[in-house]
Image (cartoon, rainbow, N blue to C red; front, top):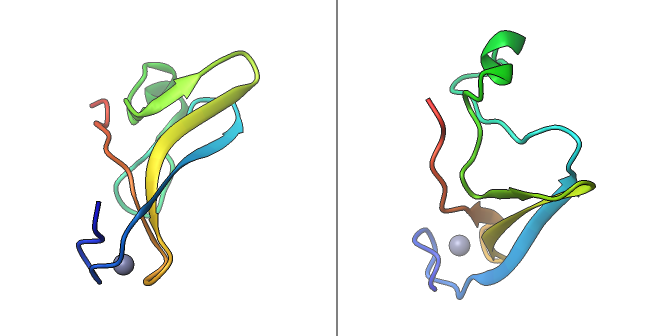
Length: 75
Ligand SMILES: [Zn+2]
């Protein structure tokens, strides 16, 4: 896959981290309110969880230092 910004070949990899809390996304600069997080809002469909880790398939561009993730955000 080519980077849509600079045309370099993207490197496929995984984002990963401690899976004890879910990965969320929220528009703007602030986290979601705790109650909305608990209700599942803002979670990424791309994040896969096990007991101790989460992973997200992603594509990294070494040219322009951007990352592309294919995901849906739960509303
Ligand atoms: Zn690029």
